[in-house]
Amino acid sequence: EIVLTQSPGTLSLSPGERATLSCRASQSVSGSYLAWYQQKPAQAPRLLIYGTSNRATGIPDRFSGSGSGTDFTLTISRLEPEDFAVYYCQQYGSPPRTFGPGTKVDFK
Amino acid sequence: QVQLQQWGAGLLKPSETLSLTCAVYGGPFRGYYWGWMRQPPGKGLEWIGEINHLGSTNYNVSLESRVTMSVDTSKSQFSLRLSSVTAADTAVYYCARYETNPWGQGTLVIVSS
Image: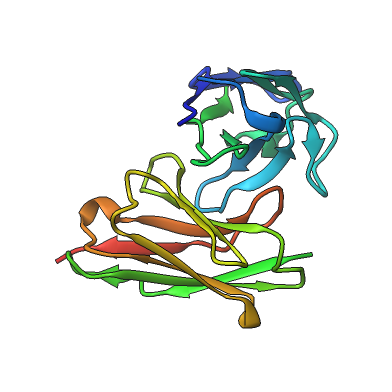
């Protein structure tokens, strides 16, 4: 089983700042099948990035993903008020399709 | 755009069987794996398992002994059954297809005597 670790656990930032979220895998993610999700309270997770760096339909270009192997990054170039949420990474290259524990982006 | 609509009982007693179904609209059903995830209150996401249109499954090892997934290709539906539930199974359950928005709307399942 691939274990995903996300850091930091909480990121305290202000609107307009840049957010950099990390996701590290215990072993290489097959085919770079790494996704990022955003979740707000009482809502289902929303896919932001799939295949490491592909934005899902309708996702603003301030969201970008990068990485390979065991180290992946989600970058939000300039935080908008609606971006304050919890972010999860998921590897779906091989079962079990594990999730990371999440990074909460909150207001400084 | 593919849409997923899920339904099932939301209140169970310990030892009962959880049963949820997810219907797929507006997109192809064949050729994909369809997944179930859950999220206990205030906690992170857990992958339960997946099934494809041929009925091929993969399950989370921690739940494997209690999980059964099935598929009805004629209706573009797939289902989850989790037996012998306990309070630890209380969670919001979601159905989803990888690389796609949106997920199902979520079903809060509470296990309580």
